[in-house]
Image (cartoon, rainbow, N blue to C red; front, side, top):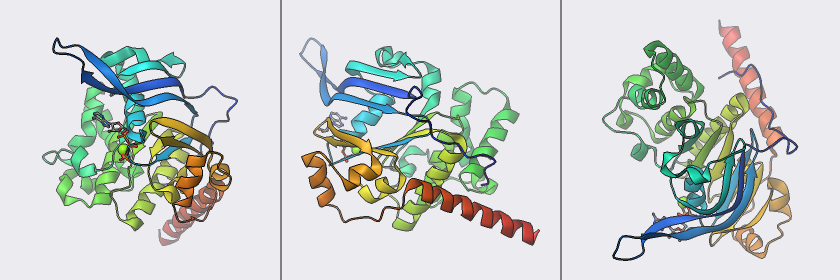
Length: 300
Ligand SMILES: Nc1ncnc2c1ncn2[C@@H]1O[C@H](COP(=O)(O)OP(=O)(O)OP(=O)(O)O)[C@@H](O)[C@H]1O
Ligand SMILES: [Mg+2]
């Protein structure tokens, strides 16, 4: 995977890609025997932005509302109040009829790749489905995009003719990423996307996500409970507690100088991780790519 250009994340002077204000969302509940439903809120008054090319992570204990926030952004849940603006358009009020274009531009990668891939579909078919759904009618064009995506996630073309159970967990998660990537999204919600993988595979997938971001300029809403991973990948971190966003800040300043009492307790409960800094990691990955390229050239 060799990048021609490296995208820089946008600065906060540009309008955000996603702008969430005072968001309240939750789960529908049958209110009475006459069939009325009401929303039982699971997240309260959330306000945050996601910039282009940025990774915003949400951390917090189990049940704090991280996945609910991701589902609300994906428009899989009703919004009780507040707004979600994507490129300046309020998408919170669209309900189930969310435009197809938004569904294309905002993709998701979840924890368990084997559950999100149909075991009876060849990998090629799983990656092709979203392209068909989003109206890419030329078979040649679909093929070109599938080949591009499979290359981008570091798999071989022959993986396309296999079934999910013929791949490792890490390879399956690469397929799930390819399936999101093939639609050229602007935002990907990664909900515990590496939590089910063993440690070394976690590292590979995290680096892959970071590389893909450098190359495509897409943004991530990265949901995780592993603070070490979050410190490694996120530009900014939001801390959730009981459905509220209690603190939001630049990753290193939040880890070094947490302001909120709950954040302090959360960090105290976690073994310290070594900060590397996003720029240094980026430089290391670019150097690694250059080395690989030089090796390939010398072997040719
Ligand atoms: N399908 C659902 N129906 C009703 N309530 C739900 C549903 N899913 C989650 N909740 C509730 O919403 C709240 C937030 O849950 P959520 O899944 O967002 O937490 P989380 O931070 O993602 O936790 P975890 O780290 O365990 O994944 C919890 O009180 C939970 O019980
Ligand atoms: Mg969750």
